[in-house]
Amino acid sequence: MERIEWGEEAASHIRGRSARYADAVGIEPEWTVEVVNDPNRLVDAPDPKSAHLNNVRTVGYSHTARMVITVAALRAADGTLRGASAWKTTGGALPVVPGRGVR
Image (cartoon, rainbow, N blue to C red; front, side, top):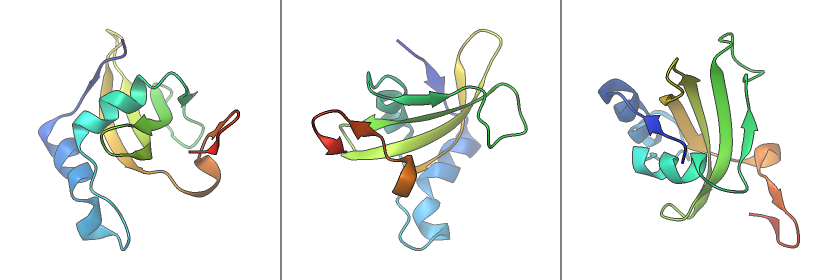
């Protein structure tokens, strides 16, 4: 099982997305645990959109939130993910599930 931890500031950041961006959804840190453990998740490690070599971008489904979420996190030396940001996934980043289409 993949572990992801959120510091207080990062958790507040993802919860408050809807206050900063039109049509955004606040993300609960608990939902990201489901995302990083989704058996159909997509993982970019290192994240090609990050300057950090230990950044991991995961796109997966949260059953609790009932949506696909993208999670950006840093991989610590002990292997734990340290959450940096998360948002509702849209557009081309949505994974296609064989036999079910886009989730």
